[in-house]
Image (cartoon, rainbow, N blue to C red; front, side, top):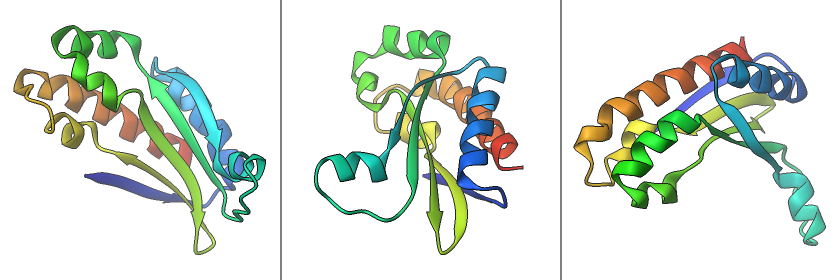
Length: 127
């Protein structure tokens, strides 16, 4: 269900490279959540670094939403960049696993395409 990789780069460099790789693969970054900053604004001290990128390919999203609007609850796709045990990691929920929760076997191929591209994006950002 989860795809996760490590990087030897800094968190900031991975985030920059993730934005570039996302655009190179015709996905867009809709927003980036900085959990540490968001929690601080809410008065919660959180010392770990975590950025959650909401990414989307509008053409792929249109394909699945035209068939099943319930899938909107799983969109946009997310890629997390975080530190754990002194290492920078990237992780995402596999679209092929998420699509299995919806009664939409005809959309499995779209989920696989999206997953393959997201893994490429993550590997490029991590390398």
